[in-house]
Image (tube, rainbow, N blue to C red; front, side, top):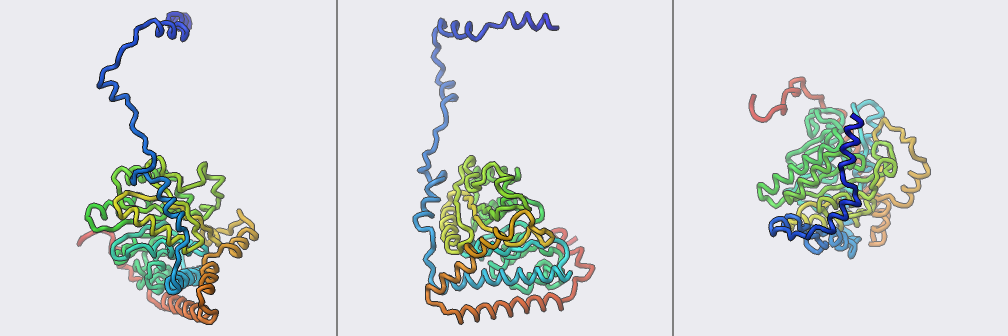
Length: 388
C-alpha cells in the first residue's frame, strides 16, 4: 500500500510545475454565464435602511437621553419603584415558603422593562420574555394582586396558579410569558412577529432574553429567519453581567452583544439599561425603525441584578463591594429620583409615592395569601385548544 501511495505521489505534479504550466497555457475567457455566477454580491455600505448597522445607533446617539416632562418621569419612577418593592416582598414570601419552585427577582433591572415597554402600543404589540418575568408584567400595568396570586399558586392568579413565577401569561395583555427553557422564547417571539406581519395589524413583538441565553443556537437561527422574512421584532438582550453566575467575559467570546446581529444584517443598539430615560429614547428609535417595515433590531441593555440568579443563589461569584458600588453610582430608581428633584418635585411628594406603593404591594400580598388554591380539576383546563 505504501508503494502504491508513493507511485501516486510521484505522478502528481509539484506546485512549481503547476505554476509553470499555468503560465504557458493561454488564458481562456470565461463565458458570460460563468462570469455572472462568479461575480461577488454587492456589499452594502450601510446607507440602505435594511442594513443600517451604524445609522440606527447614530440616530440614537444624537439624542441619547429623552427629555422627559415631570409627569412622564414620575410615571417611570412609580413603575420602577413598584417593581422594586413588589420583588422585595416576593423575596420575603419565598423565604416564608409561600412561593414554591424557582423565583427570579428583577431588582436592579427595573429601568429596562419600564423604559422599553413605555414605547410600545399595548393594544397592538406583544411581549415575550424568559423566566425573570414579574417586572415585565408590572411595567405593562398589570394588576400586582393577580401577579402575586400567581406567584403563590392561587386560583386568582393571572395563569390560575398553574404558571407560578416562571410561566406567567396573559393573552388579554398580549404578554406571552414567562418561559423556563433558556432562549426558547426567542423563536417564539419571531413567531409572534410573523403573526403581526401576516395579520397586517401594525404590531411588533418585543422579545427579551439574557446574556446567558445569547449563546444559544436557536437564537441565531431565529436572527437569520427574522432578517430573511423582514419580521417586525425587537430582540432585547438584558445583559445583567452574570447569566446564572458566570461573568460575561468568561462565557462569551464577543461581549458586545448588540453586534451579534451583524452577520444577519440586523442593526444593533448599545444602551445603558440603568437609565430609564436613555432606555425610553432608544426604544422609540428601535420601534420606529421596525414599524417602518425595516425588519428586526437587536438591542443590548447593559444592566445589573442586585440579587442572585434565583432565590437559591448566594451569588458568591462577586463581591459585596461590587454590588454596593453599582447601587451607589448607577441605581435606576435613584437616578430617576435625582432627575425628578431637578424638575422641581419635592421630597414630600416622593415620600407619598413610596407610601402609596408600599400599601399597594402589601395589599397584593394579603390578597395572594387569602385567596384559595385552585381546584384539582384546574389541572385539566387550558391543556388543549378547543373542546375535548
